[in-house]
Amino acid sequence: MSHRHASLLPGTRLRARGAASNQAGRYEATQRVAVEDGWEPPEERLVQTEVRVEVPRSALSFNRSPDLPFDRSVNPYRGCEHGCVYCFARPTHAWLNLSPGLDFETRLIARPGIGAVLEAELRAKGYRVAPVAIGTNTDPYQPCEAEHRVMREVLEVLAAFRHPVAITTKGALIERDLDLLAPMAAEGLVRVGVSVTTLDAGLARRMEPRAAAPARRLEVIRRLSAAGVGVRVMVAPVVPGLTDHELEAILAAAKEAGAVGASWIMLRLPLEVAGLWREWLERAEPGRAAKVMGRVRELHGGRDYDPAWGKRMRGEGLWAELTARRFRSAVARMGLAVDLPPLRSDLFRPPPRAGDQLSLF
Image 1 (spheres, rainbow, N blue to C red):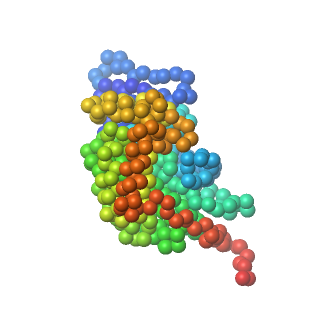
Image 2: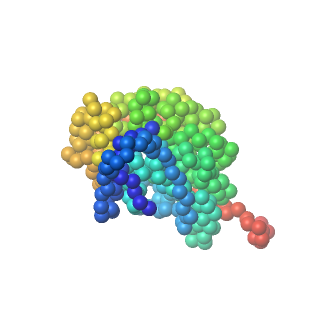
Image 3: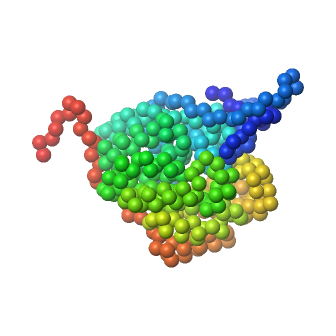
């Protein structure tokens, strides 16, 4: 696949996009620069979303990260149209010879057929069940799911196998799948994390341009909770100097909507994300850019980001400790759980297939 130009031609329009550039990924040997040659008048170009299809060879991805509470995940999509400028998953697009900038949110890859691949992996004799996480890299309920329904495929398989699953999303489309989620929740098989970064609709529109608005995410929490699905509000990321003052307000709003648990993660700026974030700050929040980056660097030993285990999710130092204290105090006061009961793994049963010999017992 070829990537778009790092700089954009005159007349290029970006409607509801987080990134404003398309710098090549770190594995590319060359950079491309768009230049208007003057032979023709500038043409207005609106950057559109493209969705390509990948035939999946595997469904489950395993990790050994000590920072993560799960060891396996499924990614129905590569890239995410929500366009959250701070997304720590942006650098993964470089593996596809695409840009972590605009390409990440406009050149998406759907993985239809992943349900059948997942089913085969769950039926393998050596498979040992444990909760699978979905939405930890890119959002399974981003807009293109309405057409491609890849997440629906995955969820149907997990429901049939009575397999535990933890879902993270900013997308209201999750409500479509309540017919599967509610029965799974009744058996202790599913939990949903809804990420709420800010209650400021204007800031959310600039920072997370195609994700559900904050009020709509709170409504998602309300509807899932009413259906018996346990919801954890995820204040993630906390942006120092920009959204950190909202921590208690977000927790209170989510609690009122029915959330039973809460978590938080500090802003992370790995690899190409740091440059995209600084570019966005200068464009969208110029009056606060220096303050935000100064605070970010205080959290990471003078750098934009420290990838060390135990530090990358929280940062360190005074501001990290103050945020952690505020969070602990707020969740204790509001009755929000930090550690929720484990999802059940003992109900896992591969469903019979046509032609299978049924057990006598």
